Length: 315
Image 1 (cartoon, helix red, strand yellow):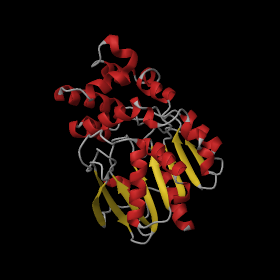
Image 2 (tube, rainbow, N blue to C red):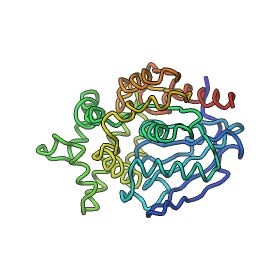
Image 3 (cartoon, rainbow, N blue to C red):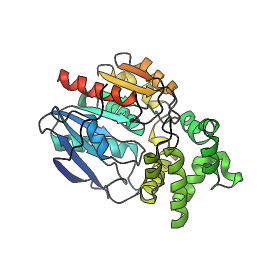
């Protein structure tokens, strides 16, 4: 069963000046001149990790990973200015120009799948293949499922801690209530709200508890960018029209790809992955039994690496 490739360090790093107040950190791993690929992390606001580099065969790929605006090693930290889906789509194109790739494989999981679809539907001629995990189309029913009613029924203990920060009168709109606190003037309340938001999400994304993820999401520095950027995007519907990503999926009809989704993915119900599969029947589809949301889940990880291996072999 395929597993992560050995740890690897970047052969190049840099900062992309977007020209509108952001410095976007990027790194390149693998073999210069190998098959071009770009990795799109989740969140929004999650940032890249060294483990993400290991999803690709370094002998065959030349992979660019980057921390999206406001998170990870990009600057300014937790900034919401000029930070929208379409700013990120433009950043991906700038980075593609930087590596001088006419096309590249686009790999995205969770929010990264949202961004990958937005990018691919805008620039289909630039995408050689798509590898998508934990499909999220950022519709109101998906947001309500996670932050209002749905996941709350599966994780009542985590939900009780999540709502504890918010007075009962405001609990009819948890997303809005958290967004107000995360963008308010009280820095201590910002951090408290960020940790509560981030920890709730970090503890429901795996089928079984994962202490490493809990610790990451409970870190104040990580949580502030993660929660501020997520709520900023979600209160604006990620600047997408209703059902836009599924509506425009036919633009990807000529692009091969792989869709991988956990049967018991709590943040991202499998219904939406199934709908994308029906819209893009040319893509391989894997609904993984006994798995939740995280890319590291058994079954999900092996499917993802099998996909990147297969596309590299075809190249």
